[in-house]
Structure formats: C-alpha cells, structure tokens
Image (cartoon, rainbow, N blue to C red; front, side, top):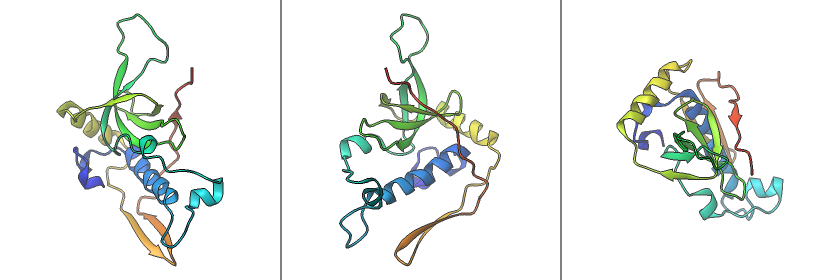
Length: 169
C-alpha cells in the first residue's frame, strides 16, 4: 500500500505510518474469514453492515481539502485545509480521520473534497516526516498463524496519537 501512494515511502510522517496499521486492522476486523459467516467486528459488537458508500468514499493516503469551519462565518479565514486521508472512523455517518498538513495532527471530519496531490503537499509531507522522531519506515509484516493474522512491526516505539475530534453541531 505504501508503494501506491503518490508521494512515496520516504515522505510518510510517523502518524501516517501508525494510521496505516490501524487502517489494515480495521479492514481485517470488518471482513469475515473464509468459511465464516460473521466478521470479528460482528462477533464482538453485534450486527454491523459493510456499507461501501460510507467506508470507501476516499482511499487511504489521498489528498483532500477538509472543511475547517464548524460554524458558518463571514470572515476571510480559509474554510478548508489540506489533509491526507487516514481512513474511516467506523461510524455510520461516514466520518474519516485525516492528517492535517497545517498542524501535523490527526483530525476527524465528515466533509471533504478529494483532489490530486500537488507538489507543495509532497514537500510539506517530506518536511513533516523529517520532524518525526524516527526516519525509518516501519517494517510491517502481515502473516497467517493458526488462521489468525499477526501484524509485526519492527519499530515498536509507536505511541497512541492524539486525535482532535470534530464537534457535532
């Protein structure tokens, strides 16, 4: 998945790498294994439907302009900011997590416009990846063991990242 991103593996900040692991686990828990009727999420949380229109609106790593204002204002301040999609939150409203290019924090938004990746976004991602504590790309290995998927991460210094939630009006 990292090879398919338009900005390459060298320009990935640490928070995006952590979100990539969470994204993979999200989808592994949402899809039933072979010969099973229910997914792991359905077994734990009850009936959950996979809604393509909700969860697959925008691919992981896509660039978007996310709406910043939660209230209607009449100022000249920008109403959108550039961000990188980190995947769905899993709620029924279709909310996604984004990596803000302005602050370098993870934000949650319901409204966005997907756009092609401009060169200044790639430069900003390279700048933010240099600020990350670890410049090495995490060595992520997915393998099957006794019909369970194990995720091995070579860089074990990942910490829980702070998420800034969107207020619901």
